[in-house]
Image (tube, rainbow, N blue to C red):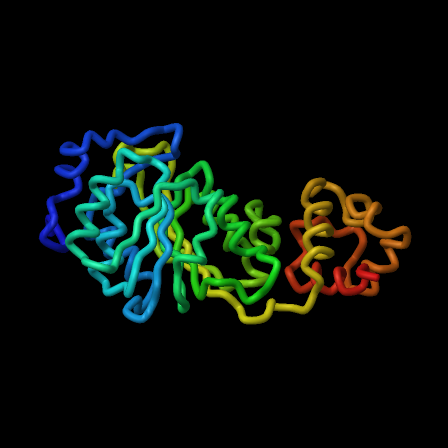
Length: 279
């Protein structure tokens, strides 16, 4: 399938608008409209939703989202070179695409969106993890989004869904799984992109939990997890000794052996410790 609408194929769009990918912006363009439509479908039924997309580039995923029936798409694109190509998509889908020429780290997208809201994006590699952490740590929970369907480097995706005992298990896994259900729904080889990155990519779908998986104070949990994984080769009684003067007693009260290392502790264990440590 060369196209999913009446617009030109993406290679033609890129050539017309001279949109060579910029490494400084973390750009790798996904040109297969079959794949962009498939990614859009991983977000579920979009017909009654506003969708936030970060870094649309020439608009392959944008077209997939609109073709799959998204009520409205807000696309935030830092690279002004992409705006004419995105304007052509907006013209083909009247009233359904709004494009902001802005840095996604600097703009409050919620003022332009109406719930229910889903975030679907092939995130620029250089800001992907920072954006995810922001979406998982708002001051008020539940957040503005119902689900996140995001493409990352495969290594980052594996860190998000990692389980205790694995090398990938760490702060990102706990942060994501405490407040969302996360799973990898697609993997993509380097040759799917232009230019091909040196690594594989993966799409992660996160569905928010209305309440965290286990009760805990967010700030306390974050502090404990950071301390434990910053010295992940040390036993908890050593890595967490600054968290409380009687940390060994508190670890035992939480059902945790003080000689465990951070990567051996499940999410529930960290939450139990956070409840005991918090004054």
